[in-house]
Length: 79
Image (cartoon, rainbow, N blue to C red; front, side, top):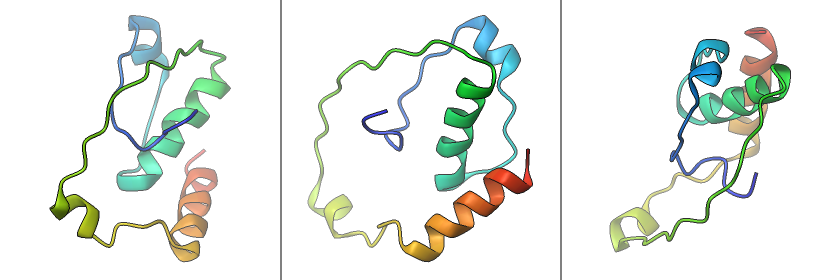
């Protein structure tokens, strides 16, 4: 997936009934991707235009190594 953190999603009924999540924030998006793979659901990317504001560009919301490891841990702990 090109931008797994964009937050824009559309789900089929089958996907809604199959995908189970237990996390939030950055972990949520990764967990949804794992669930798509686990249930062998099809997905399609649709390009969206992103317009960043000065406020959003100034936020320190970068994914650090610590947060990345935390995400992996939570994903596998919650399987």
